[in-house]
Length: 133
Length: 280
Image (cartoon, rainbow over all chains, first blue to last red):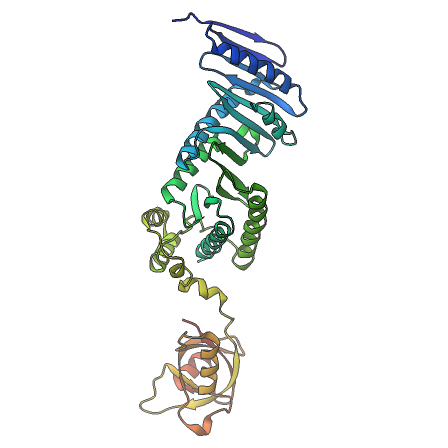
């Protein structure tokens, strides 16, 4: 059993929650974090949530809505898997949800779950390409 | 009745889309958690489970200002749930589907059909329970119950859920769908003649057979057995109608009226009355 260490760093715009483990999957998690940090700079991107089985990184413009975004992100991934199973579409590669004001791109990459929140006019197709193998 | 018009128009459109795009494997339209119409190949239970999963996202999408579209890309295909005129359209496409073609077709066809149906039959407040693939008799029964109580609404939904798949041909000819397309009953002015005698029924007027034939031609197989009468003063009554027996009175623009009906309408022989067929 790996001992988990939790740290919370908060700035005016960024909240990061880390559950650090020494497993190999941390490498993929770190790479994705770097990739997301770049995407975060793109025009129209509001923020992102990255979760693995042992760690989570959240970077959002409005920290007061972190819980709502986190719950939404989790629900989107669960419902997408459910719908995909109903229509026998295999593993879910990505889910795009569009609201009246914003949209979110949710991805599952290995053990890592990603949700990127952005303005309606942001280029989600370009962001999706950045995760293509 | 409006519900049936919607369901029929939308179902036909979905079937057409699936016919034109074989890579579209499932389609259905829902509103407020209830299925309005679904394509022939779509299982009702699957559609309901999809709606539940979609609603779970909607409940948590307040931070996004409400949910409009969900697109799920799976390894073997894609599911789109799109909001259109307050309705949600779900399409399931295989991976090889020409998405641009399908989207163009859907984004043109569905809103057009919805607008058309709304123009013909504006949706009413009673349209909470929209029927799908029930037999005409069941639909009529369900509608009557819907108008009376909310409890009946639940019953009609249960009926929908247990309904089995019907061939399209059977759905295309429900009587309720034809009613709104009937022309307005024509109004004819006739001169009142007295009608008396021992064997004359007091609740029946007689008019030209040609006029009844004309009405029959207008309404096809609808049987016209009654007419609405209205005087120039605005007094009205409804009574039975039969053709004039005496050939001397034919094609004279008269209506033979028993004294009882004349008293009801406060009219006498020689006065004018407007006659309108009652369509059963």
